Structures are given as C-alpha cells and as structure tokens.
Image 1 (tube, rainbow, N blue to C red):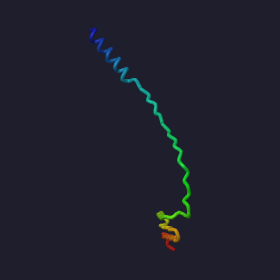
Image 2 (image 1 turned 180 degrees about the horizontal axis):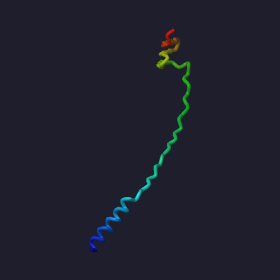
Image 3 (image 1 turned 120 degrees about the horizontal axis):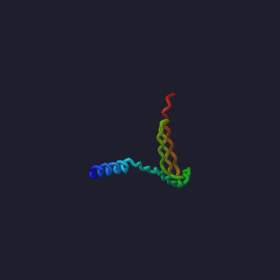
Image 4 (image 1 turned 135 degrees about the vertical axis):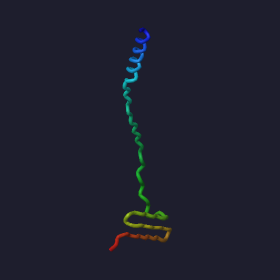
Length: 77
C-alpha cells in the first residue's frame, strides 16, 4: 500500500511540474544607425551614368570637353 501511495504521489508531483507554464518574454532589440546624407553628384564631374526605369533608359557620359546624353522613352505617341 505504501508503494502505491508513493507512486501516485510521484505521478501527481510530476504532473504538476509538467503543467507549470513558463512565460517567456519576447524582447525586441532596436538598433538605430545614423545614415549619412546623400551628397548630390556634381554636374562638372566626368563619368558615365545609366538609369533604367519603367519609363525608359537614360544614358549620359561626360569627358572634359564633350558631353553626350541619350534618352529612350517607352511612350508610344
């Protein structure tokens, strides 16, 4: 009889421990990073630029003395 009582007591204790709800804290970490402001491109700078969008394609290139710009639009007139 003592063994049966101990077994039931053990099962009761184990069931109470198993049913214990643990509440986990959901912590959110927010990292703020300062982004440097964009500097506008200089018009006097030499180089090549290509821009592709749903409106069309724009290509421009500039050397010291020459400047070339090409715009291709998708507008059908």
